[in-house]
Length: 162
Image 1 (cartoon, rainbow, N blue to C red):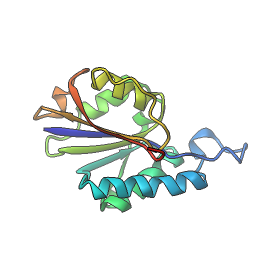
Image 2 (tube, rainbow, N blue to C red):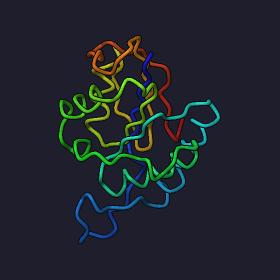
Image 3 (tube, helix red, strand yellow):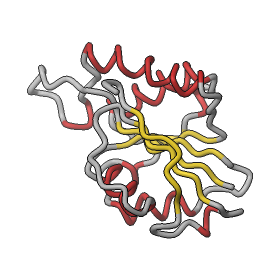
């Protein structure tokens, strides 16, 4: 059994127009929502074996906060360029190349890719994942290489306003 948690980064700031997109930090709401969502995962007993995040500042911040709340070592978060607006196929390849020893994979990234992946993996799931939203998908497989579209089962869909 493999578990994938797709996490959309928390709400980011657009106050500083001189920043590049990948430099934008979390805003106050994002800094409030991310620990709440991490605590919800912790309270459910959900912990990562491996945590991947986009290099964008807002995604890294979200991943760091959720990691702290769930007991995952912040310095062990793996930053993956493929997650930053590189497309669904690229993220799919990244997921399928994870080690078999990883049973629960957290992946923090961006829409539309996060929502598109959820829609691909879970039959009948049609939703746009809101900021700091988390979708937990289980796969009845032994290796990440066996992940297939429509091969997952929805375990949890949670977001700050839920």
